[in-house]
Picture 1 (tube, helix red, strand yellow):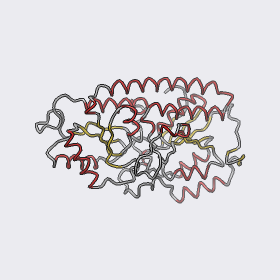
Picture 2: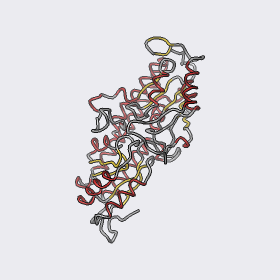
Picture 3: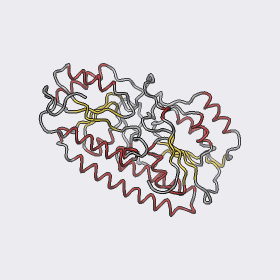
Picture 4: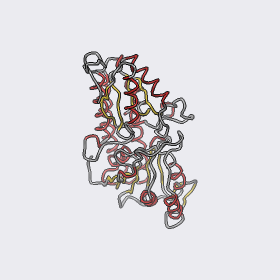
Length: 356
């Protein structure tokens, strides 16, 4: 990324790896002390309510806009579009599962003192949405998915009528999310609208090139092999956009445990269709995929782990996968390499695959 803005990430100790799952829509929660702090801050020296739940406008042309963003993907979009006009603080670092993230007291303080909080929406952040509802009369909050035509969103069966929140895996949809960020910054700081417009255009041009790259790489995989099996069902938009059948052990949200019946049904499909590889995810425990491998092996077929994909978070800062473009390129390159392996998949002698 360019410019001299700050793009700080919260430490990864907010990760939920290893925490027990609860019901499907339980989602992220807010510790009671943090919630109390939020309520206290909301009643103190924050800007007064303007009208209809909108904070009173601030004069921002003479200083940087203080931005808080929930996920790394959103933080990057805000930093790229805002350039030197923004100071971006990211809440969720590498390997953090946003479905289960618990806001810390530090998060609440940063959100309460921000000029704007950008979040994904569509229930990705779980119960953190309640926090944004409580804060919106005092701090501007923007769901970056609000600008996406609802006709382009997916409503997965069994997700209680809600939309699939993983829109960033269709790069064309993420371009629309970036446009929402641009419009929000422009509205808050109209003096510098030309900056946000120019930066937004450059960023969308990079994303357009990324979309072409993913389509070109996907075409390498024979149609019969375009089956993407992952730990949780985060890649449905990817599958629709780039021609893959997608199967996840868990549902859209990782708060739902994968049951024995789910594992056996997926193992049967893999063995029958001789799918060469399945994939682990950076923010989901590997035990589900390992159980799936065992179930497939019991059916006389071996499926290998084709690699680790980034799903709900990006890679480490400073690494290629620590950017949105790098993350998406890593994913498609990993998928193509695993699913286009020559030779018969799953052979007992290990040709074309084998276990991890």
